[in-house]
Image 1 (cartoon, helix red, strand yellow):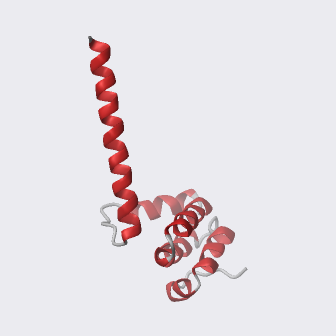
Image 2: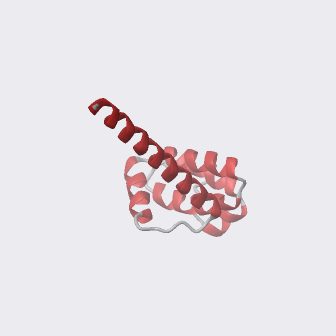
Amino acid sequence: MAVSFNKVEAARRPELAVLSAMAHGQGEHGVAIAAAALPAIRGLDDERARFYGDLVLNSVNEAARRALEAMMKGYEYQSDFAKKYVAQGRLEGRQRARHSAAAAARSLR
């Protein structure tokens, strides 16, 4: 399989970009491949986008994953897809914090 890190080609054929990440993500071009694949999957339905995003991130080497995470620091999500899951995660975090606080208060009685 050819290495694909062209963002235009990835946008046209996101599944091929994901396969490229799976096949070559551990190599020297892991960051570039993932950086092309991840934006390409944003336009897909939620289920496939989540699945493909997970595949891409788990297919790149640790250095590439750290580089991608560094690129994302301070990034404000643009897609409704990402905003939805960020909001869901924050809600779950607040619910867990409330539950933990209530449990701690009960144990002090």
